[in-house]
Image 1 (cartoon, helix red, strand yellow):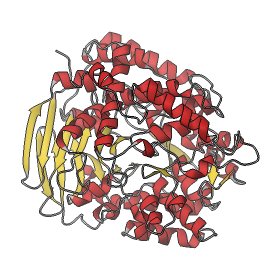
Image 2: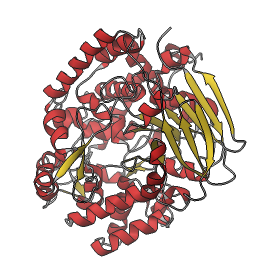
Image 3: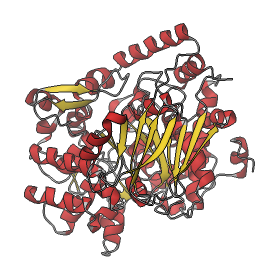
Length: 572
C-alpha cells in the first residue's frame, strides 16, 4: 500500500450533498494524480457533448502524490470542459492551494451542480461545507480574496467569471491566474470561491533517501542557468532579451515581429527600476514572481508584458501594469484579453490607445462581447482570419514561425493554443535539454510526443511547469518511491503520460474535434522574403503532422488505433 491520502470529495451544489470516497489505488497507478486524475474523472463524469456551462460539467481540483512533499510541487490542477474551446482543459495552478488541499487529505475535489444562491466551498481539515456568499457576489478577486484569506488559500473568481465571460479564470490568492474560461464554469454554478486550509502533515515514506533526492533536485536547479540565473533572478521577464535578439516576439496580432522597446520590459531593466521582493510558491527554490515593494503589486509575467505591451505596440509600462492588475482583479486571462484587443486593433488598422486600454478591459470584465474570445468574436463578424488561436485558445507571445517544433506543439495540443502542454521553447530557443534547429520540423514529431508525455507526468505529480528544465522521469520515479512508496519505473511514468494524452485526445474526438482542428492560423503559412524566418512551409508541416500521428499510433486522421488503446489499458 502506498502512502497517499486516498480521499475523493464530491460536492453537488444543487442538493448541497457532500460525498467522501476512497481514491482507487489502481486509478492512481494508471493516472498518477493531478492532471491525469482530473482527466480520468472528467471523462467518467461528463459526456464530451455536454454544455460546459451546464450544472453537470464538473470543476475538478486535484493534487498529486508529491504535492506538499517535493520542491516545486505545491500547486493543484483544475480540470473541466472549457466553455472557450469546447475541449477538455487542465490548468496547472501555482501557489499553495494544492498543498492545503493535500493537507486536508484530499486527492480530488469534484464540484458539480448549481447553487441556489451565490456560495463558496470551505474546506477546513476534515470539515467541508457550502457557505452562502451573497456579500461577496459582485466583488472582484482582490476584495473576495481579502475577505476569505483568513480561512485559508483562496481560489476565487471575479466579476468576469460571475458574468460567464468565456476568457475568465479563477485567481489563486490574488496572484496566479489561468486560462480556458474555467472561471465562467464557476460563475455558471454561482460558485464564488473555494477556500482550503489543511491540518495534516505528511512525511516521506523513506525520509533519508527522499532528503538526498531533494538535495539532488536543488543542485540540478542551481546547475540550470534558465532556472538559477534567469527565472530566479528576473522571473519570466528574463525571456524578453533573448526572444527579442532571436526575433521571436510577435507584435500587431502576429502580423509583425520584433519590437523597439524590449530593453524597457526586460527582466534586467525592471530589476533596476523597481525595489522588488520575491514572491514564491511554498517550497519553491526559484521565486519567479516579483512584488513591487512600494505598491505591493506583483510584476506582470512575460505573458502580460507581451499581451499588453509588445502585441499592442504599447511601451507605456505603467499602462501594462494597470492592465495586468485589471485582469487579475476581474479574473481575466491576459493572453486571451490582449490577443482579442490586438486583433481589434488590426481590424481598425490602428492601435489601441493607452487611455482606452483600461476601459476596454473593464468592459470585457463586465461582459462585453470580446470576452467571448477572439475566435467567436471575429467569426461573428466574418473576420475569423484575425483570430490567432488553435482550437479556440489564443496563442501566447512566442512566434511559431521561428520555433517550428512549438508550431507543431500548438497544433497538436488537446487544450488548444497552450504552450505549456509542450514547451518546445526549451530545446529550440534555450537549448534545454538539448539545442534543436528551430527553423526545421524534421525529426521534431518524435521529440514532441516525448515532451508532451513528460509534461503530462509533471502536471500529474503536480510539479511547476518550469521544473521540466531540471528534472526527468528517472528522478520522478525515485521521488515517488522514496516519497510515497509508489514503485513506478521511468518507462511506466512516460506510459502514464501517454495514457493521459490519449484519453484527452479521445475526449476531444468524442466532442466533435477532427483532424482539421490540429491546425494553425493561415497567417503562419504565409511566406515572406526569407522562408526560414517568415512562413512555415505547409508541406513540411503536413508531413510532420502525419509523422506525429504515426509516432502516437494514430491513423492519418489523428484517431488512436485499437491496438494503441489496448496497449494503454483502455480495454477496447
